[in-house]
Length: 619
View (tube, rainbow, N blue to C red):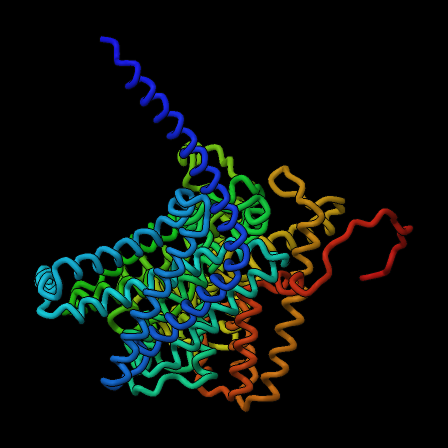
């Protein structure tokens, strides 16, 4: 059927006008987008500053609410502040969404924040539609009678999630700064220590409601972040559950590293990291290839959580008769699993594990030793042991030279330490025990002394000979890319191999038909020399500030610098100056003496010349 001519003309005119209007709309829309882009460049710095202010206010609000006993009027005003902060975050989000031309990309890259904002909007719409009655009905679904307590709790959770999200999003920015990797690593540890100290100073962190004083809070926070375990207050009796949870979180963050954790989550909640950022990170996780950095980070976190979960299960089953309350039993299990794997040595028992319940409990001893050893082997070694066919690898011994050195050194040190402790303390602290118990106690002390800090015997009652053995084990420590401290097993192994090469007249340092690079040998020498200088210097300072036996001060300094955590009972008696010295020692020992030195050194430059060589008489 053919349309009338007038209708066709009308239809054609309509199409022409429609296309013209659409073109005008597009041109106008593009003009608006350009204006919004220009406006966004002006507003963006203010939005960043506004968001930073909101994050700081949110942290202050949560600390005030959870760390202090606020009176009713202040608590109400704090709740209003929290709601205002959430509205501020929402305003910032929608402002960004309005100003940007890539709205879909913004929503995808900020999916976590989008979900949080959408949840808040849903609650607001529900209130507008259903009013107070509807929200109270929702409250009954969660077992409550009033909506406001639930809203306040939801507000706190919302703020915590937003703070975490903002902090995680700051990781790529931090890695983009023109700083040395060593400076970024040291700065991340310092920031966590500072935050931990502030939280431990809040009244709710301690049983007496006074909070820790500044020096004790700094000491405890540093000891936890540096996975040391030295304490100036009893973690079991002086800290509340809130304080103990803070310590556990600090241990976990310190063991894995703030950058490792933040980067992992940043890669999930944002669009990713650049090559330069990955290059900075690879050194912090013990990776040599930039392309494998993200996979390595995922493996580190995955292996850690898996082993800690297995360890917590082992503790939980071993303490079946100790606790009547399953929630307390679960918390104790989680705390000790994190502390043991991270080689921290913190315990929520007053005497560590040196009591009748734990000292001779085979389940507790075996679980703790497995966690300490796996945490001290290093993630590089652990992954090499896990991947591939383990039976084939063990039969043909086809591990890398690094893994072979780590396994040999670990096995030898555990064996030598066990035998030495058993022989030297047979009639000492081991007297009165059965032979099987003596062997168990000796094995445990040998494993824990190198880095962990747990103990099942009285360390203060050890003889001088045993103390010297402990000093040796402590300074050697565990292995690289691990949660443990010390100058590392590979460092000592390389030095011994270098000495053997010199004695046997070989020009190269060899192991397992492989030549160890000269740079590795030089680095090992540097670590050993700088560690010796630091130990001498800090011990010398302690002899000036403290009125304690020299052997006790020496033991304390070795324990702090090697991030072990064992003590002969003088930690709580240290003066403020002595505690400060130990704090610095723990920090240097955890970050690494070479890492800290490189943070302040000039960038390495290649020279285009060589001087003539000349011999020097050295022996």
